[in-house]
Amino acid sequence: MKKLTSATKILTRHPANPLISPDDYPGVMQMFNPSPAMYNGETILLVSMIFFKNDRLGETRVARSTDGIHFTIADEPFIKLDTSAYPYDIVCKHTIDNRVTQIGDTYYILTPTSAWPHQGSATILGKTKDFKTYEVMEIITLPRNRGASLFPEKINGKYYKLDRPGAGTGSQGDIWLSASPDLIYWGEYRPVLCPYAHWNMSKIGPTPPIKTKQGWLVIIHGVCQPCDGPHYSIGAMLLDLEQPWKIIGKTHSTLLNPEKDYETRGWVDNVVFPCGAIADEAKDELRLYYGAADTRICLATGSLSEVVTACIESI
Image (cartoon, rainbow, N blue to C red; front, side):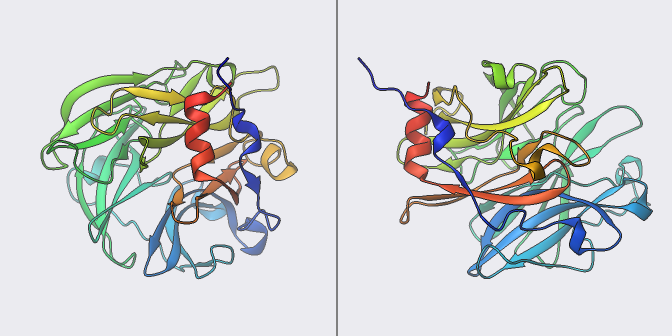
């Protein structure tokens, strides 16, 4: 009989959680949903922040750390759009929940932001080489598409990204795939994964794929609707390296559920939310920075190979 693996025991929460909290920053209402990257030996987080004075308009700031635990947050927003010029004059200043992907020496940033009143989120593509300067490139999805995530290299001569159409409609959110010759013009849309388990029965969403020997590892979030309101949990799926629309496996159990007080109580209760992860194959380590209760930023770590195995053999 085939041995099956529970994903729930792989990740361990860091004892210093929450690593970043609004308690330490007067005037800040929320600090959440970080997108991680490594740059010049530093751990970088693009932190989603909302201030009391800004009436819930969110912004992105850069947080830096030499040890991956203690972070210094920039004093100014990182993503700045010229909202006086078309088409960004119709795009809201609410720029949060980024997804960062490194290709060569460039870091591409996919940022969901509202387009037209009541139309939901479209995705803006930008880039940086130093996390000091940001260059906007183009709006690369129609609304509603929240959580688009770019693959870190071309596959058979094409760029690929994972999409999450239907975001914010209240209906099920699924994961799709699209391809591009140049990162600007996208097509070849293909369905990849729809909600499939109790913990993600309402909707699911992707983060930037991580290349492993077995396939593309994608950390995903899932939402269910118990009696006390939505619960956001974290799982994973594994895609074929050459045909990324093909699923090799997925975790049927979760990697992380909202269980700790800092995850179950906040501006949005019962939320653990990923925007990416940092993998180190040499150390067999996965560092998952995540938002907790849409209020704080936390870290969980575990074996990269065990997460991949759990996708293939999960119960």
